[in-house]
Image (cartoon, rainbow, N blue to C red):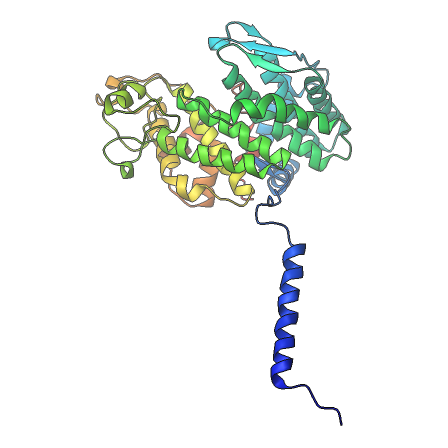
Length: 395
């Protein structure tokens, strides 16, 4: 007579099966360090955002239609544009010398403009032109030199991935895409990702470039490294009262005492919500830094790591503080000695849309500035067409 297996034996067998199943699952599963999948297109703009813009332009709604017309009338949208790549782009202080600096930046903006035009119109001629420009540079450029090389690399390196993401993920054919990726990985990323000890707009733009390039390359390690450095620099670039008696020290080091910090902040020793490290230098360079903060936050949100909650106080105060003076409010004596150099630029749409429209934060000064200057065009460096892409964009 056969004996039935005991309950203990059955239990033991069940446990063994469970253990074996867990082991097999562990072997089959990717290791913990494997990079998570990025969302594409996903540098500054998602597909849902692009679809929103396309729909608004098709409906001839404002302000998107006027912004679209502004973009299409610009030199950047010309289908007769001839790219002007160089093997070595040499940029000195304030682009003196300027050997290919303007050409590179503007070709990158043109590629991005054409990519947007392709998506909105469906006309493949624009995608072909964007690819022509990107291919010309990826076949040619090898390095950047002279004192402004890190900033030049950052500005162009911020814009190239925006164009490349749209083309790669919405247009059916780009044969030299791998060569373009190699260009970003070897010419741009090694320069920008270490950061720099300089005025904050430099490092913030460098981190914007590193983040965008990392998304295009599906490089999680570089992305995480850039985001970590960005968080430190953003926190030290804009002061809020929660920081305490003085701003945070920048991450690059070299600023170790309060006296050095005040000098680094252009001699400003009174700190108020929204003041930036470069406010007392001029609003134009400050605008570069604020724009880069918003751009990285927007890309991070698309990639599932929303940075706006931790940045919202700095970004809303920075925007409100500087637009207040741009709108004509008198500068008090304790801010930059009572005199500032205005010229913030077309840099408010991304941050305003994220904080005011998505998060519901009241931003009267920023709203006045933003609406009065629509459509916001390009600063011809790394900002372009943000009324078109981000005004009222809920996606």
